[in-house]
Length: 319
Ligand SMILES: Nc1ncnc2c1ncn2[C@@H]1O[C@H](COP(=O)(O)OP(=O)(O)O)[C@@H](O)[C@H]1O
Ligand SMILES: [Mg+2]
Image (cartoon, rainbow, N blue to C red; front, side, top):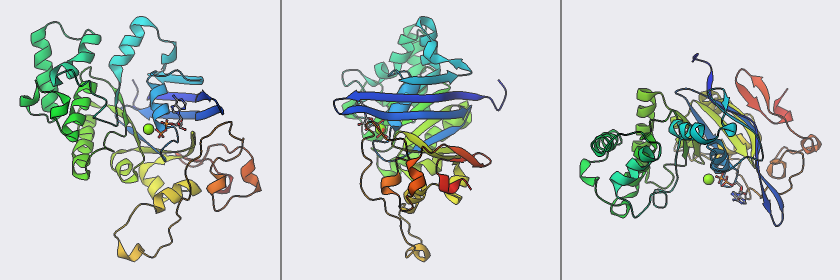
């Protein structure tokens, strides 16, 4: 595989939910591309469609339309054996380490389960050996092997979730807010573990979070979502240095700072919540909260490249 070929790609990916009040556009025309060994961070407020995007990519729920490619193949067309292979390559780590582990299974059985499902080990001894190895990689002391999830704290549970995802040696992992439920000091440990694994094994991540400090730490590229749509996409340093979309700017200005010289800098606070995108109108979905809203915002906004690798969906920023 050539260096620059993407590992995972989506094309015009959409997911709509039928609700009693109309069609809810949770994910709208998302085009993304993740290279081997890299992390694409997805940020946006709660309800903007991040988890739905991750689920559709892993086929946990079907898309309304659009395509998902893994190494150039449309995985939405996969059936039977191919699907099994897909699950070996693509895994997920969930936000809540308290509900995402089966409380009735021991730690060793939780970690072993995906290997059993995918038929990856020949016998019990091999399985036990592999579980031991995964626990070590994820920083879980061997004494926990026969304990149950309720006996572990949040950080250790999330390490179990990670060991389970790694058990099949995936090349791509969707991390859905994997550290949001953890204390800050434990967050850093888990993030560093994920980054070490990336360096050693070349895993790619789609890393979902609402936390900009976390996304800055872990991502190569960042995608900003608002109400199901991508409003900005750029390389990490470029996005933090030169945010263009009014929504991205508002998000960045809301990061708490302890730098005293910046204390009086005006903060563009985001007012109100993200509304449910039910039967949305064609114009910019952020316009009702945007300080710069104008007549032009009633037109559909397209994501355009304004500098190499930097895309934004706002007519004001497109020169
Ligand atoms: N199964 C579902 N049925 C109806 N609406 C849903 C369903 N799942 C998610 N939604 C809606 O889709 C939108 C995006 O949700 P979600 O992807 O969970 O956002 P995020 O992960 O960014 O917080 C929200 O408005 C949510 O209420
Ligand atoms: Mg979510």
